[in-house]
Structures are given as structure tokens and as C-alpha cells.
Image (cartoon, rainbow, N blue to C red; front, side):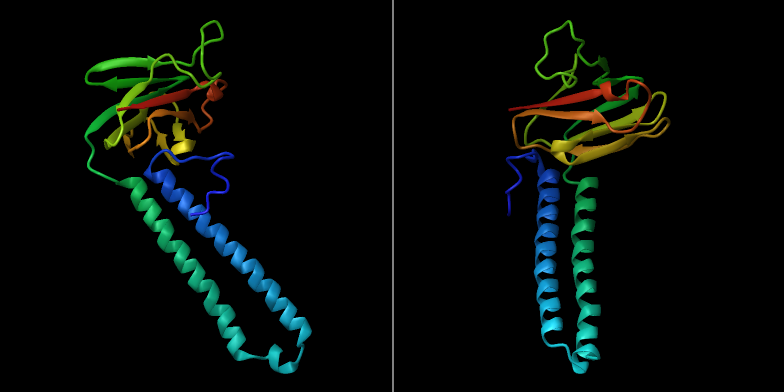
Length: 208
């Protein structure tokens, strides 16, 4: 795979992130190929401008067939990524997450914990990212996240993991998480939910 941008801004931490990275690389390679193909075509067209080239039925058919072939490949990979985002493995570890204005409530084995953003008076490692409570998960273990909302519509997204799920009042959505790396997975509310929308982070720490 082409990983020329991984060290700059994105390093996937789970399988879904790897799938999205592969999909992005594939699209970039196709775009580069199309650019050079169109460059060659326009050079050929203006260098050999004849009536036979203009009314060529073979060329017209190729320009009709080639985009359909590319779109079919994009469709196959898109459906595969969508399927993998819905179901990867059989879950072993599960917990429930409830969105509130403007914090998250963690429900794990009949225990309730509220996860708030750390204020400026306390020590923090990353500003506006660290939380008072977060979930600890084992690596290489399929985990199921049940998410809902108590008041308005929220949405939890993990950019490094390529994961996102909506938290809707009265509805229970699911998200399967699997990581093979040790470290923190930082999540954020990605749905405008009020004046403190930007201060609703959530963290999952993966351990051995």
C-alpha cells in the first residue's frame, strides 16, 4: 500500500481504519491513472485531429465502458467497507454509552460512570481531549459499543479508527471495535448538540 501520508496526519489503529486507508489509496491511484490517461488522450486528439478520430464508434464505446468499470470497482470496495463497519467479529466485551449535554455516561456491568472533559485546573495530557473517566479494553478482543442519547442527538466519532455512530434518543445503535495496537483512541462528538458541543470528548484505552 501507499503510505506516503500516514506519518503526516493519519495512522489507523484498527482494522476498519486499515480498510478506509486501502480504499483511499485505491481512489488516489485511480485518479492518478485517469489524469495521465486524459493527458495522453488530449495529446493524441490534438496531434491527430481527423474526422475518423472524431466519429470513432470504438472510442465512444470505450469512453462509455471505462467509467462504468471504475464505478463498479468503487461500488465493490464501498460495500465491503460498509459491511465490515457493521459486523467484524463476534463480540466478547461490551458496554453502553449514553450521550448527555455535554458529557458521556458509561454503563459497564451495572456500574455508571460519567465522563467529563478535564478542566483547566487539573493536569491533563492533551487539552480538550483528556476525560475524567474512560474505558479500558483489551487488544485483539472484539468489543461491542451500545450507544444512545438522553436528550438531543449526539454522534461519537473516532477519526483514528475510521469509526462513527449516531446517538439518538430512544434508539440503541451499535458499533463494533477491534484494535491490535496499545494506546488511546480519542473520540469526539461530531453532531452539533449545543453551545458546548466541542467539549464532549471520549477516550478508549487499549491494554494487553
